Image (tube, rainbow, N blue to C red; front, top):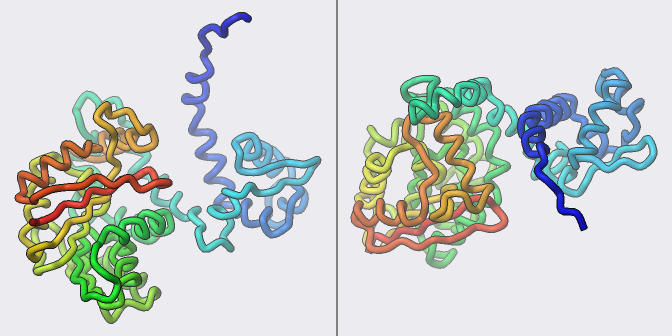
Length: 337
């Protein structure tokens, strides 16, 4: 049997990947997935429902079928199981709105200057990138990314420790949408959550806490995590998707603040994209380092060994690594003593 020789397929797949992105964005804009899920399955029916040309809908829907978002039988389109769960607006797990953050002009601009970022060793867009003071992009993040965080939040809440009936004092640092603290409040009826973030971001977290029915146990601490007092003592400090924005000394500074804020026997729960020591596996986790290169001055995807050392130098007695399948993120539990 003849062996297959070198192929340019990877080059073409990668160089044209933006076409898949824009096709997906277009389908979300047209609400095409919800329409197909509701029973409008031909190009003619879909075109009438979303005010588009039948030819345009046919070509877009065929492309999305090839990409794996639809199945096609004759001239009729059907949603896949994944599409029905995550891209039909009628689904409680709908994530389509996350495209507004993930495809935000500021983030795309960072990648359009990636060569300059590689040469510089950090974002070429500005001195600070997305972590600039009170950046409004984090309001968009808070409003659109919560559905993608529901599963990691459930898994992380399982690491908070103790019994569901016990009082629990929790500080959620850089709370964003607030889902991580809110999920703990739902699981622990006597938990009290303090959410720390910029005032305009906390407005979104407050809305989510009210919607979840935990607002009476939800306090706001507005401001920068570097400038405001964290208060305490707390039983749990949450550092979720935060450390990756900064260099090692800054991460150690934040870890030290967490250590100070904790009560004896307390723990910090860190959620991150944590690659293996080779920094290329698992692939869905390890690729996040490129996002940090493009969008931050000194952020990175840190290995467990690196995070373990940060927390040890901040005074923590020990740290444990916890994979969180099927998500692409991992957790570190660091114990004060």
